[in-house]
Length: 229
Ligand SMILES: [Zn+2]
Image (cartoon, rainbow, N blue to C red; front, top):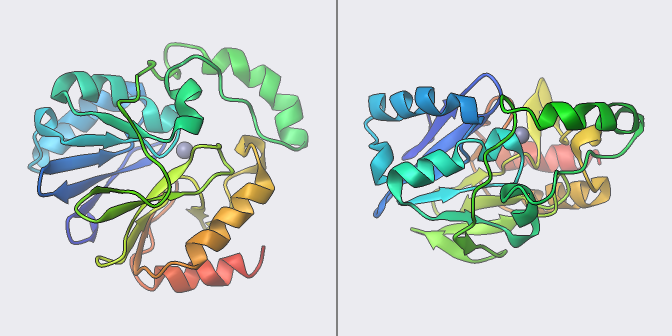
């Protein structure tokens, strides 16, 4: 499904990723869980994209459901990985990503840590070839928007002319727009500020990691949601 012309959604059981057509070739935005790579490779081919011809692998943040396939897709394509430096330690596997805040994180955080390290779930570590910063343009007018909170290095991609925002896990759309779950959000006040930052942009379509993308009047929906925070 295209959420906007040239911006393709791929949904997996865990997470959404996106393929953005650029003049240099397809740019992959997030990479799914590592176990999804063979299936995603088949899906990409079926959609007419050659996984060995990716021009870039943009990682919205360092969580395993977004980074899991990055090492394999990078190997297959030679495409550079792009990410924000603040999530480098998680992406490169140097530091395990801390749980969020609140009672659920306090109870389940320590229990979840060994599970997160299992081969089935853990993202193979991958290097970051290019660090991106807020406001820079990465490809064909796609502008990086730093949306910290869920993780410190969460970055979205915004195209002002195409009026599309790919926001990673800055919000989810499970029944309605929501903040990412507190138990997986490292800094909730920052996450709220990031929603306000999104609300100041103008876009028709919003692609996110979890839940249905919003394909019409998305910035109005985000403004309404931001007003509740
Ligand atoms: Zn996620």
